[in-house]
Figure 1 (cartoon, rainbow, N blue to C red):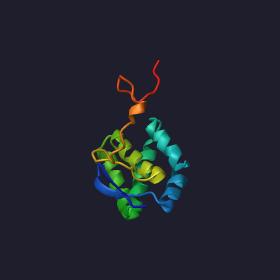
Figure 2: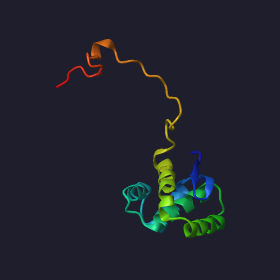
Figure 3: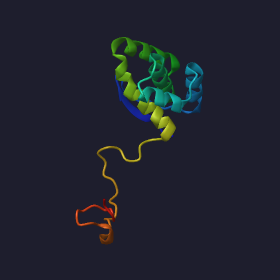
Figure 4: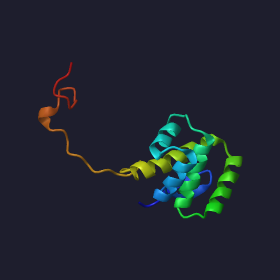
Length: 130
């Protein structure tokens, strides 16, 4: 899978959690990717969750380990932790579910209109209404 292009406090970077990075992340945080995704999404994260997801994402995107560590240390000292929640969710979601099928702002395929026999006088596609 191609890396995600993530815009975050560190700029714009390719990030990816391939199997090697997922194993490192799991060993470091003692949690699997979907557990972490939900923990962050629900606001039950720890600073290390955000730090490690993004650090491993940078490494998976091609950055050297030492460079990723230094960048993360500097950024975590300069920005509020909340600034890293969205990017961490993006990296984990990309690893667990893949890239989004239809990014916001892109034209999607036109679907066929609702057949006339399923339309009601109010314009709804429901056959029956209460």
